[in-house]
Image 1 (tube, rainbow, N blue to C red):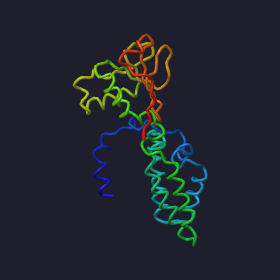
Image 2: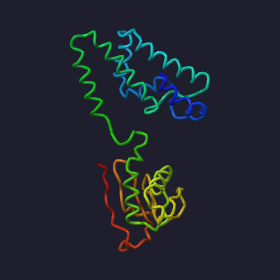
Image 3: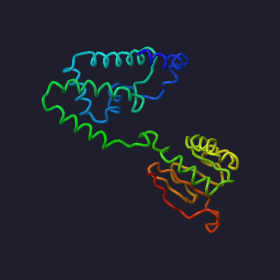
Image 4: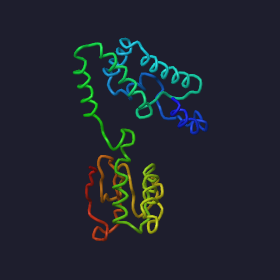
Length: 230
């Protein structure tokens, strides 16, 4: 508790309710994004009834604090990764409750295997478009090192970051944000656009690099390829 207080005191002292804009309007929607499946949520709630100890009290205090923030400051309920601290608390409650049952290790092992199976290391669901940012920048640096690049927000910020820290800042112009109707030599997009020829598509993000149709395919721009992150 002392370590957490020291680490959080300084940043939280400058925070406002407006900083916590990402979330859900209701508690039920929040829990469904954190625990993924309704059955998992029911299991956790049932475990709190069996545990009835300090772990359940800790979980209850956390929800009471979240409710107070929601009612008094209009802070939305946690959504997905912003509620990740609830997962270890829920696991501790469920594990302690299941310890009362002789064969509890079997369902817990099954639940652990399910969690590992559905995990997507490398990116979170709502930030999937950023899963290939490093590979996208490497491709741009290799094929368009001296070309002005327009990237669809928020991809522009990610690519500009890699340009700044990766050494490309010496030769590559800054990556700018792109809006429909804006012209550029090279585009980094989240979805196909008419009158643009795609030269690369990256998975799992779905990010695509495109050039104007008028660009000569026999020029230095490469033919369309598919890039996959591993």
